[in-house]
Length: 265
Ligand SMILES: Cc1cc2nc3c(=O)[nH]c(=O)nc-3n(C[C@H](O)[C@H](O)[C@H](O)COP(=O)(O)OP(=O)(O)OC[C@H]3O[C@@H](n4cnc5c(N)ncnc54)[C@H](O)[C@@H]3O)c2cc1C
Image 1 (cartoon, rainbow, N blue to C red):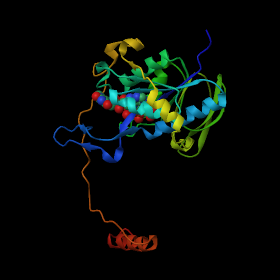
Image 2: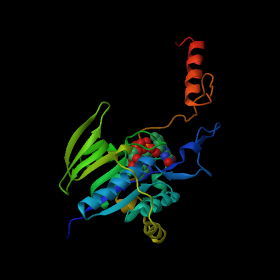
Image 3: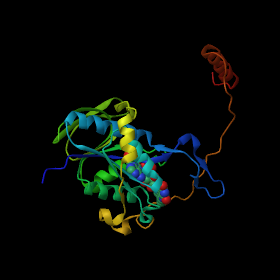
Image 4: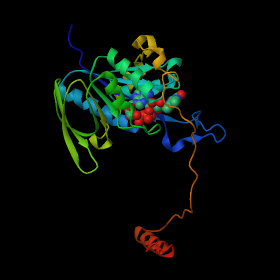
C-alpha cells in the first residue's frame, strides 16, 4: 500500500472573542447566539499546511476538529480556504473534556488519519492553555516544535523550522512525523477562493465518535479529565478609566499631564 502523506490541521471553533459573556449566576460562558469562528492561530496553521503541500508537491490537507455538531461550520470554512477533507469528532462522550481528554481524542483521530505532519495553533483564544498541541504529540509519541515562526526546509523525512523565543529564535530540525504549533508571524492566511467555497458547500464531513477512533471512553469527557474548572468569572474592572482624545500629539500631552497629576512623572 502506498504511504499516506497526510497533513492534519487541528481546527478549534471558538466564540468571537469580542462577544464572549459570562452568566453571572452560573459562571458559565453564554454560547447561545454568540457568533463563532476558526481560532485565529489555526488559520495560520492551515495556511502553513497548504504551503507545505505546495512545496512538497503532494499530500492531502485534512482539517480536524472536536466539538459540538455546529463546529462543522469551522471545517467547511477550512475547506473553503483550501483543505481537501475534514473530520469532526462529535459525540456526547467527548463533552466536558479537559485538555488531556481533548488531546487524547485528537491523537486517536490523527492516528487513524496517518498524519506525517500535524499542525496546531499556538493556543486557542478561549481556553488559552497552549497545552493541546504538545499533549497530542506526547500521546502520539512523536516530536513537536512549539511557536514555529518560519519553515526553512521540508521533505517527507525531515523539517527545519525557526521557533520563536523571548529573545530571538532557535533553529530546530526534526524527523517526520512531527507536530508543529504555529504563531501568527509564520504567514498571512489566504482568503477563501470561489472554488473552495463551492467545495465547502458540497463536502461531506464525517462525524466520528469514540468507536471510530478506537478511543477508550474512560479517557474521554469528564471521566477522563484530571483537571476541573472551579469557577469562571469576568474579572472586576479596577480603578478609573479615562479615554484620551484628539490627535496623537494632543493625546501624548494629555497622557504626560495625567501621569504628572498622578505623581508618576
Ligand atoms: C474540566 C474541564 C471541562 C471542560 N469542559 C468543556 C466542555 O464541556 N465544553 C467545551 O467546549 N470545553 C470544555 N473545556 C475546555 C476544553 O477542554 C478546552 O477548550 C480544550 O481542551 C482545548 O484547550 P485550549 O482551549 O486551552 O486549547 P489550546 O491548547 O490553547 O489550543 C492549542 C491548539 O490546539 C488545537 N485545538 C485545541 N482544541 C481543539 C479542538 N477542540 N479541536 C481541534 N483542535 C483543537 C488548535 O489547533 C489550537 O490552536 C473543559 C476544560 C476543563 C479543564
